[in-house]
Every structure is written in structure tokens, then in C-alpha cells.
Image (tube, rainbow, N blue to C red; front, side, top):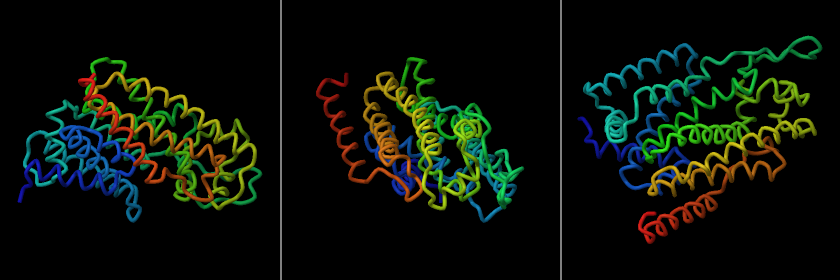
Length: 315
């Protein structure tokens, strides 16, 4: 039986509530129609991520599965019959908020980038052991920026279409806000990513601070940070900090009814970066996160912003 649009949105909201973690606290601060649309986009992106991250399958099989699913979405987007609630909800959101198919394709491309990453063998002259992994790495920050653009900035470009904006400067600011979020994720997840054979810190930055790929692989096993390693992570955090300035500059450029949601999202991610710095960049002994009570406090402040905006007549 084909779900109605409202039933489809309800399913997407459940997916977002279950999986979105940081994002869902921001979704709550949106008006209903915009919240529905954001949840549909999130559910679409979540399914693409799941197809890409299924490590029980080979990379080639995951690429084939993702291509088949994307082809099914294209057929649905062009008016074809579908029973998929995520496709039904997203098609409705796309129509209401003018989200281009190109942007949605870029979202999927972003989830698949780890299936195409260049590989690097960390062994070489002077190595005392050959590591069994061929690591996914990025040579330069420009390479990493491109990755962050597809996995995070495109999300921001979709979101601002739902939030509403008229100043074209909002697009560059949304792009850079996505970079800030993804750099924060990369810092938080170094240990887990290294265990999966992925080191996102650019090779040129490792070289600058005298840190090797082997050092990062060892750190995932709980070794203490050296001064060089800590300075490397502090350098990357400084980059992220600069991009958070774009998030604050973006706020006044989007529709007033969406500003509290964006404020909540930027505040939660920025708080995560601050917690990483407060722990002297020890992201290896345990996973750093923003506690639920802190997220709820940020959400409460965001909801207060909604009330104040309404009292001021939406200005």
C-alpha cells in the first residue's frame, strides 16, 4: 500500500528522531512544513549513508547498490510510481522548496566518496613494520575540502533552500559552515576512522608537524599524544574555528522562522569543537560528545529565540 504524503513525512520524522542526534535538536526549532522537509532530506541522506557504509559488502557491491537506489529515486522524482516513503516525502519537499535534483545527486555522491578514496600504504623506507591496511587518505587540505564539500556543505546548501534566503552570499556561507561541521566530525572520529582504514587529516599537514600515518594508527590504540601530534590537532581545530564564523554570518541571511534552528545546530557543533579543545585534543581515550542535557539547554535557548521573534512581530 502506498503511503500518503503525511504518512511518508511521519516515517521520515521517526528516522530523524532515531538517527539524527545533533541535527534533530535543530529540526525541532523549525516550523512544521520546514521540519518535515528537513527530515525527508535527512532520511534520504541516511539511507544513502547506510548503503555506502555496509562493510559486510565489497566496495564494488556497495557502489552498485547505491547506483540502483539512486536510479529508483530519479524515476520517482520524475513522477514514476513508488511505495518508498522517503521518496514520496522528498518529492513533496523538493516541489515546495525548489531543491534541485543536482543538489540531491551531490548528496548521494558525498556519501559514496569513501568508496572511491585514494589509498596510501603507510609502510616505506625506514618503516619497522608493514601495516596490513591500505589507508584512505587525502594529500592536501584542498583535497579534503572537496570531500567536506560533498559530505557536508551540500547538506547546508539544501538546508538553506528549506530555511529560505534571498541574499546569494548565503550559499558560500552555508558551504563554509558545512566545512566547519565536517572538520569537527573528523577531529572527533579520528580513532574510529583510523580503525576503518581512513585518515582524513591531510598528508601535507601531517608532514608539516612531523606526524606519520603510523603515529595516527598507533594513537587509535590509546597512546599518549606527543607535542607535535597535539599541535597538529590544534591546527585543524583552528581551521574549523574560522569556518564557524561563517555560520554566525549566515544567521541574519536566512528567514527569521528558521534562524533559531540554524543557531541551535551551529551552537551544538561548535560546543563539540570546544569540548575537544578542552580535553587537549585527546579524542582517543574515549569518544567526545555534547551531553544530552547540554543539547537540551541549547535547544531551550533556540526555542526562546522563536518566542522573542514572535513577540517582536517576526523581525
